[in-house]
Amino acid sequence: MAAMPTGNFSRLRVQRGALVEYAAAPSPLTLVFEFNPATISRTRSVTIRTGGAPGTRGGYDFSDVREVARASQGVSVNAESFTVKILLDATDRMDGGDPLAARMGVQPELDLLRSMVEPKSQAPGGARTLAALGEGDERAFARHEYASVLLFVWGPHVLPVFMTQVQLEVKEYLPSLVPYRAEATLTLQIIESNNPFYREELKRQFAVAASAPGALQGLAGRLLR
Image 1: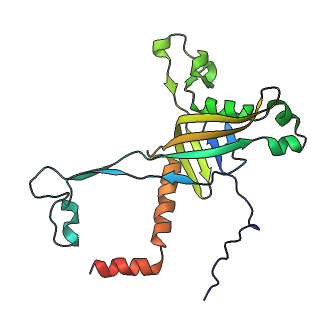
Image 2: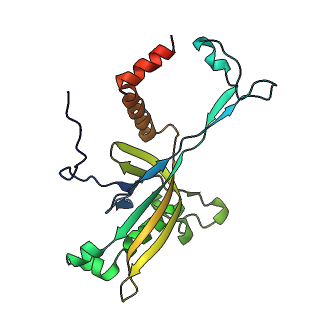
Image 3: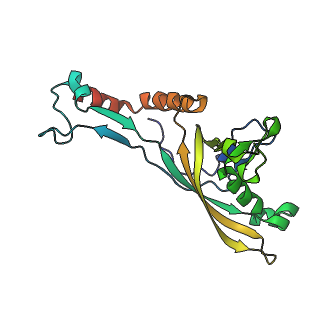
């Protein structure tokens, strides 16, 4: 019998999560998490249509596995959003003699996150720029503004997301009033369209689900008999 894990993972190499802008740009916006979030809460919800017929009590009757499709009148999947809270702290870099950290603290990271959530527009020559700068089409009604597509890289997951909200709370300032410690709460919405990243995530999800512990699969098989 294989030995059970001890729970001591100190020798494992730490892999950093990241947010990367998916853009045709020489230097896409990129934030590698200096400190990985301790928890990530994801909620998957669907809207089930069961009709209003008397006596349905949340679903229509079925007698065996061949009739499960009639238990509801339809189902729609709601867009999945999740919230990530990350710590931004320049203390170690300042102690290590990093001149940029000593001068600017975590201000670059704060500005980067704000830039990620800002709408973009197409500038002359095809380059993208912040829509607020007004460097796209001169006519405001003709200007096409769009949200940045970001890749949330977390272990085996590469999720295409929109950032719908960023909340920044500065915890500590240097004497120069430069922030050097802050907490960012990011709300991300997964883009569940036909795109290569979400297709790969679905393949990964179903492949891992198929390898679930045999005891659980055996239980499901007995229930279906």
